[in-house]
Length: 341
Image 1 (cartoon, rainbow, N blue to C red):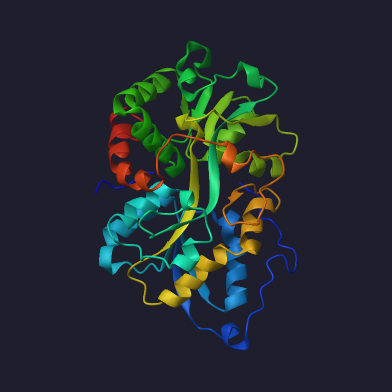
Image 2 (image 1 turned 90 degrees about the horizontal axis):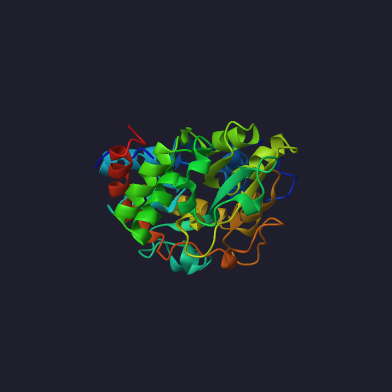
């Protein structure tokens, strides 16, 4: 398979914020899990450290882009040393699951999360939700000045004013969703016209948001929570999120999700990690800690104040499980139109 090309301030976790009492035997655990993490180290490290503190299970973490890690897992196959894959999008998870490299998860785990946000084949489960948005500079633009759909950004008005991260897994999942909902011909045309319109490419979502804040560009295609990460560092930054309308590909709600790698020799410890991510305490960490605003997916945990409810965001009518199956063709398309070569 073609190799997948797919800042947040560290929040101080208050004492007891993720309080779970570990037994004496847990504290003495000598188990170590190899964790492939497509999540940024600065975002998840406090939570991973909490997991080890609670359970005694050590984590040997390999950080990289979710797409890169998915490619690595596919290349490693049965020889992979990984126990856990924590990815930033369903496409990367689906690509690995489709090759049978993630274990089927128990229903008691899957049942904690709404069906919309877990794999149809039960091989991964969503941990948090992330909505695609158009972030814009609020000193330059008003919401009413923005196109009503993602298709409107091909207009000449936006020439040289758009930023996006073409090699990022979440952007690639968005393009996959566009392909699956609107067709490849229309998606190719949109990509070609956006590029011809002078769109600027960045390596990371955070860089896109920073460029919008500095007026290097006026709008960017990112996930919603990057605005909150930037504002944690620069509270006065003139940036706002624009959520697109019903069935728009630009309104895709994706997930960060986790799966247990088939090759693990420690399935019980790996399953404990998955279940830890779905505790209410861990969900609150992602949803409400300083600089964080991901959508919690476990019942009973509220999203950050000011965010529209997930039921109010209706993106393209596709299953998240389809993103993995469609990813390889998306990568070919992005390369053909000059986004990733």
